[in-house]
Image (cartoon, rainbow, N blue to C red; front, side):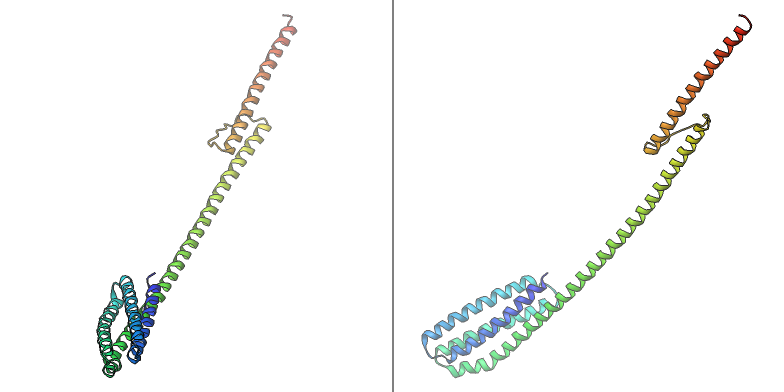
Amino acid sequence: DRWLPGTRHAGILGTQVSLLRAAQFQHVLTFGEDERRALEKQMDDMGGNINKELQSLTDIFSAGAEQQALAALQTGWKQYQAQQVEIVGLARQRRDEEALDILKGPALQTFGILTTQLRALGKIAQDGGLQAREESAAIQTSVLYGNLGALLVTIVLGLLIARTLNRTIAGGLSYAAQLTRKVAQGDLSARITPNTGDEIGQLLHAVRDMQDALTRLVTRVRQGSDAVSTASAEIATGN
């Protein structure tokens, strides 16, 4: 997010420019050479910091209204730097009244332009941050609704699958129970065809194996019964 750093750098620039202007007045009103040199060093450092902050804003604001405001700010800053050089030169020559005239006249106008552009940049950054937060909130809401929709679809599909499985299992158990009752009633003619590999299919396989075993048993019993009948008939006829 570029808006928060932009707001921060614009605020720092506003503070640095205000401190620089205060140092300019102090420089003109100071009579000691050592103090003036110290203030000149301080103003040079402030100017370097302002250049760094401007470069940071240049890296952040690269298009649109913020770039136009930044270009106007940079133009004003170059003009203010030129005026500062002139003010410092006049103060070194003890032409303090002329230096004050520039400070209270052209430099004041340039200072007003700088602060206006800085406020404009700050407002652009703040508005951009608010818009970015609103867009982020809208995206989060959309994602939330999407997740809820996907969850709802998953629940519906799960219910449909569970219902289908329930019908399949219930149908398979009912079929196995029906076959078991027929076998219990002695009807071994029903054809059992397991068509699944799950537990229901295994149960039908077991019922079919039981049916086959009972069929073989009944066959052997009938064969034995027929043999006994034949032997009894032969004994009865004296053979």
